[in-house]
Length: 113
Length: 115
Image (tube, rainbow over the protein chains, first blue to last red):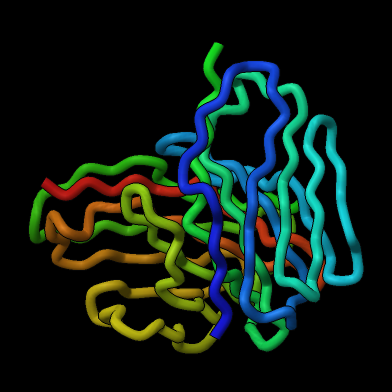
């Protein structure tokens, strides 16, 4: 059974720092992995999608990597800003699923001005 | 990109009443939709898979008589929380899948508070 773990559960850093969020999954048989952002009381914003055949994806200050063989993904945020404060969720789409996603519990990120 | 619209975004209801949440795919047809629930500080948990024209598939531990799902058309799925209790207060969010290797699309979520 696929399990997704995110470490750390919470992170607080000063503005301007570069940081890395971690996501690990137990079964490498996945279609893709997605990183999302969730603001308090709000829905989900898709940040980056990495296909199983890809190693990384970049969007602006965000870079996500995928090492399928080791079951790991990282989300790198460069030059963090207070507006980056949110909960970041990763989710994988298993190959044997009916398109459903398996979610990590998220990392709550606080960027201090 | 594809858009999934979820309504209402917030609802407060009294214990014992029922609440309906709608999830619409605006520019594509969704034969399948997923309904998730999120408790505070926890991750999303799949409640059920809604299938157009057939019965929904519920995850273990989810009461099908309490959480009624209807997927009457290719663009609309509804979740009705019946005889709501305060412990049903949660964040509910729907999702429609893209093709196998594309991203999933999410509604804006519904914050349900049962008083």
